[in-house]
Image (cartoon, rainbow, N blue to C red; front, side, top):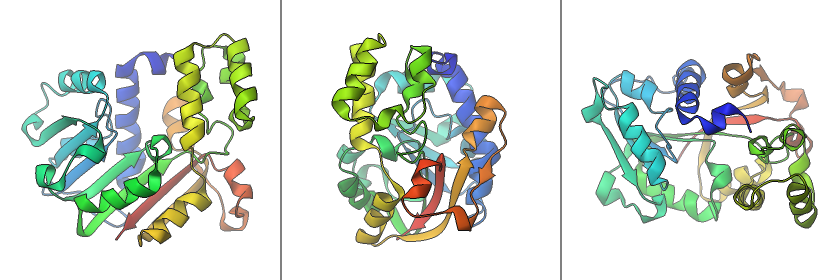
Length: 260
């Protein structure tokens, strides 16, 4: 397990930097980020992805089921000059109504959709928080990519650095994790991710079924996150290598902007 997974302030700063450097410029290809915008982040954690938007004066709402992370978030933003424009809600997004929080100009899900059960129902629910011009940003690791199972959270250094480990059959995956000395909580978390991990084909099928339109999308061979974590410059996969199904095994991240 890397120190960034233990030290949530480090993780907060990494999210902030990546969103500022890569996510906002990506979104601004379509939507200029101005102070009048209302921003919703689903699965916000400590709010690192929201900070660059709040820095620009946007009205921000973060929803997360993890109350401990939200308590830390409040301390991180306590002295922010625009803290009155920020609201955190500790709840499952499926239990939050649009009457409670309204609609938004931009909705962000960064490294979240791959953790959500029943993704079809979630994508249907998402429309409640959208008006006709709302954009939704998704950034997520494709399930079959070398570390799409999030095995980097393992404490065992061999397991945490083993690519495609998560593609083992579930019973064998559990056995390897147990043999490697991983805790029950870690094993359960990794199996849960195995249950909800999402492929490009599945994600785009859901978009089609729920009548969303892809505004722009980008396949990354080197995830923009890796610049912040490891100093590796992002690399986009050229179109001729975006081979259906096969490219899932080497696409480390996808960025999408979608709308109704």
